[in-house]
Length: 327
Image (spheres, rainbow, N blue to C red):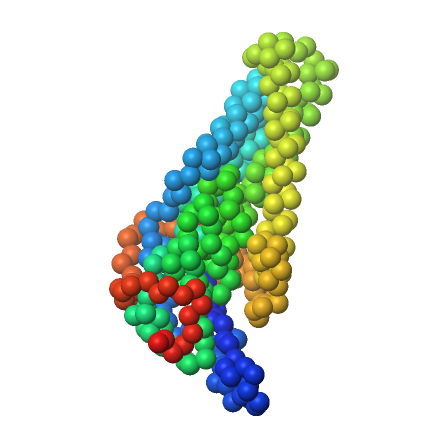
């Protein structure tokens, strides 16, 4: 998931002076800032990322518990008591595989840096290292004191500016941004699939039990079996609708190259949008392949030691709108 072109904003000089606008030396909107990607990205991009938010942690734990509950009902109420061994093996393998991929996607969405901008880099020394030209302005986030790249927004929960932030999702205890959107899409897709699969199996189980003796349909008592199945049916239906809508929303955001927060704030059309398929390749990390469906793509057990650019230290500039050249 490569970072898009990070652009800075330009301003006109000499407003109110006749003909002054024609002689400005503003950069084109698509021109890159001449700076290493290691400077734009957070220095913790390769390290473990975890948000210490009580609400998010509770929601993440609830998510895992709900998946484990579905796993319990599917295995011990429906599949293991079944007389059809082939039915149990096929459906058990499929359900467990999808559940494993869903939890792995959830873990990666939660523990991946979504694209945090380094904190406290709004210093004179850092801005001078960007080698910007006169006439440009950069914007400082007053909350985390960082220079905001284009399309970055501040998250009050993460307490950081996040590049291409779509929204903060408490269910994954993280922002959905430039670096982890793929894992969030996979998480919603796999949860929707296991919800649909569970609902189909519940329907078949009810039909079989109506034709046969309820005492032979499950190792639990008939009332307990009915309650467990109804709860699973309610859970599956609820999360099927919710995650299907989220999946469609995220795919639409990727294809339109427009995040949810940009659409909410009406910030559309302020950047050069890329075509749908190119945006999908950027979000999923390359040309179409099976790795698009894998939450493990890009994982490596080897410790890489990239050469990080050291941000020059100095005092934080007080102004939120900083014009080049600096005074």
